[in-house]
Length: 282
Image 1 (tube, rainbow, N blue to C red):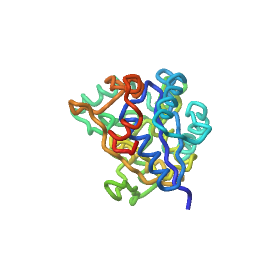
Image 2: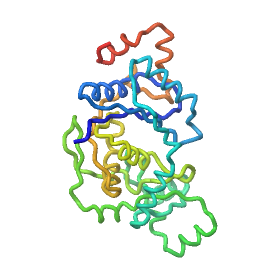
Image 3: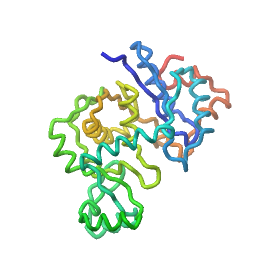
Image 4: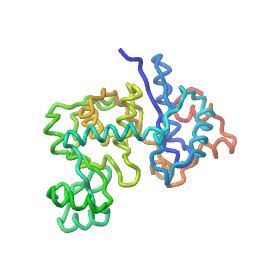
């Protein structure tokens, strides 16, 4: 049996807050208590939002918390070829199709249809480019029209068949329902991959056996499960924890300027005090 291996995989788009601290401590504690490994991965595939300076600040915050990790740290931006290879494997199975739609065009199509099912990432893609003829696709590709690559979920489900499951330690065995995210983008127009594809590839390559993350990513796991099957990757055990909230009950988020670990540290809060507040021994 492989050694239990957990990871903390933040995006370096700003400073860490208490919610990040909870996830990192939970993953680190699980590995420590079970005699396993803890890895740190920097998910920096988006060059417009991610910086090395922010990554260095993440290292600083985690060190302050008393968390140690194996080196070298995997930076996703240094491994784009791995994601390209995975996308090519899916393309060769006929499971990807080019999508030339802009966000505005997708919204207009949804409005014309009168309604659209919603997933965790908003209205589901209405299938516009999936229905293009081969001639239409070829013409658009030949003229260099920008495009993403989406998973043809119908074909993927036909290939994997029923019976895909995954396990969450809080909610038990789950039947995979990737239809919750529909024909998801696996290769973005601008960066050559996507969160969904990169995270599944990385977890497989790094031998992650246990994934600790917030319940906001619970629904995405249904899609990740079918990608694992299609790419022949092992299936980790998932530990989706509740999200930390502020005094008004809103989830902590960088975009809402949640109080950062750095500001707590500078205000005199010790790592021991914060860990006790979060339910971990200081």
